[in-house]
Image (cartoon, rainbow, N blue to C red; front, side, top):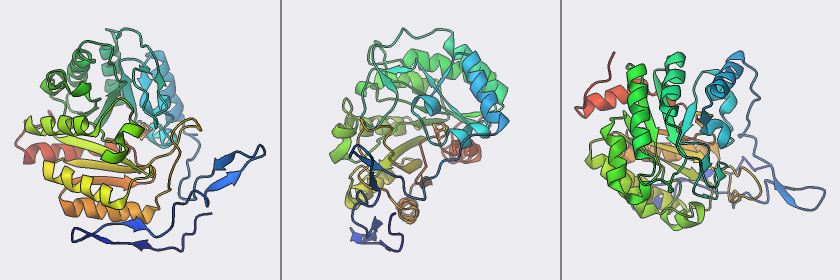
Length: 334
Ligand code: SF4
């Protein structure tokens, strides 16, 4: 068991208090030996995932299957799938279910994907219109095999979804387009309401975590989206070995850039072949990071052990509308 009696310190970095758990990395506390002698991690008590039981969960599951869609919820083994799908919140993943990259934190299959399905945008739009959501997130696998990295397929999907659900706000969580802003512009030109791209971790760990990506390239993509006046969002996983001064520096940079929404969540290894969890970050530390990021100037922050980039995003329609108004962007219909 993790010693919950240990307090959270707030050391001073650049004149500001930043959170860091007093506990040493909790690997030993959260590691149990199994019969073959291989250490196996146990999650701490604050990471509990209920089994899905509500009928809505199974209705969503059936409809996703009928429409031959993919979701990052299922493909990436997201721990929140029971909770999210039970309230009709899901994150559809376009461009197939095979990714050309091999990020070491991610459970999506790596390989050679099939060509994009030209009918997929229609089915995505149909599914989302049926759900009558106020806000949704769509993401994709990385498609480094395509000349535009999937940009045109993205644009068609956004157009179809907006036509079918004009009152819904739409967030797109995209890859890095290998730094090609002309391909990212295909997405931005289709005017999603939120443009999200995850940094995932601090610069020092970026190559180790996202083998074929780079922190500067991802940062430059967010910078480009900001220059295009998009509402921007990014996310970091904690528990990969990052230091508090590294996290605080990233947060301050993001605030300086004008990123609107930040998510901070605990990294959980999907399997033993993925990167190991270096540390379980206690809930109080997430709260402290949230306060730090808000204080730094980021408008909206979701932080917590089970927070993922799309977690609770379904409740962010009002926020997105308010951000659009504050930036003088065209209002969403309805
Ligand atoms: S947090 Fe996001 S990816 Fe996970 S189940 Fe919820 S909507 Fe899906």
